[in-house]
View 1 (cartoon, one colour):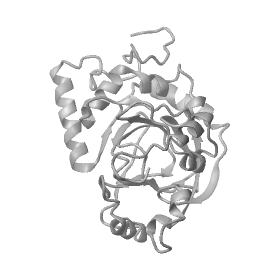
View 2 (cartoon, one colour):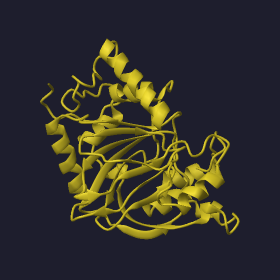
View 3 (cartoon, helix red, strand yellow):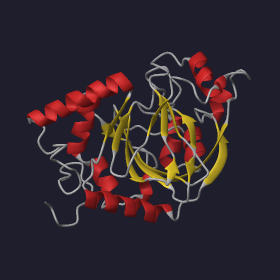
View 4 (cartoon, one colour):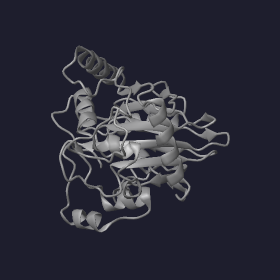
Length: 297
């Protein structure tokens, strides 16, 4: 066990003090246990579009992660607003009035952005670790994955206070890794519709059907606990966090990766989600990068 203070390191990234390596042998990718685990993970993602690994963090790391995110959450403003699934006002204005992509839903959330999450934190160390990236890469069947170049997104934490929810949306990247750090007293279930859209097909009719029916049979629900890790195909699967009840906020760290380096979110979506943009977003916007799968970013 490494007792000294550790920092996020994309070259080394020791995790044996954070991850239950007996159940999840990230330090031994050549073992039969690793192979069996990855095979199981791939199977669940292929079948369900979502994978949950219970108690991924060691108890001490789970408590540390919870305390770190909770401390940062105290200074984060909660934004109460109505949002569409895509959060792309610049593009949605051109759609037909009855297009479901123009429907808005109320949400109340706060975002702890990457520039606020220190390199010594559990979430940042996990995000940058090459061992963790190798595990995620194998689980999703990618050749290689990269951290976001986006100075705000990539590594964030969402805060959903009681009486609020994180409304239906898609993610800009193919898959997202989440780590539950604080569970609410009740509610706050993760809800998703696996593979509702696919490359080249937004499936607008399917989207409209789900948005019109809160109890649509294709909606699946997952109750996460602190220390649980989730890998989810968020670009293709519509998802939300249901209403949180009780007196405790819901906190989840979100670790996003891309299939290429240099990915930065579009200005309009970044401003809609985080309430601000950086110089990097403005510069990237000038290059007019487009998605490579024919879907709205």
